[in-house]
Image 1 (spheres, rainbow, N blue to C red):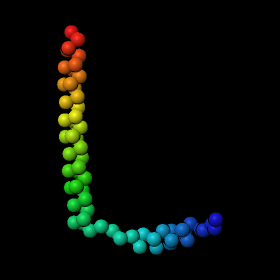
Image 2: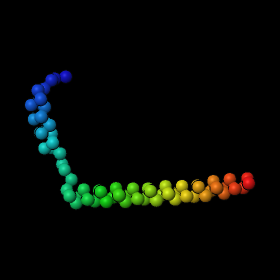
Image 3: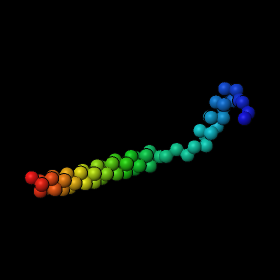
Image 4: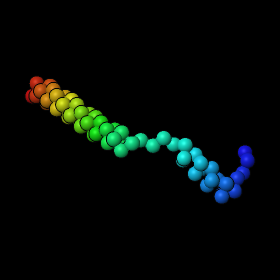
Length: 65
C-alpha cells in the first residue's frame, strides 16, 4: 500500500468530492417527504398489530378466569 502525504490525500479527497453527483433541492425534498410518509405508515402498522395482538392476548387470558 502506497503512503501519501496528508497534502496529497486532501488533494485526492477534493478531486473525488468533485466527481459526486449531488441531489437537487427538489430531489432532497421528495426523498425526505417519502421517508416521513414511510415512517408514519410503519408506525401505524405496528400500532395496529400491537393493538390487535394485545386485545387477543387479553381475551385469551380472560377465558381462563
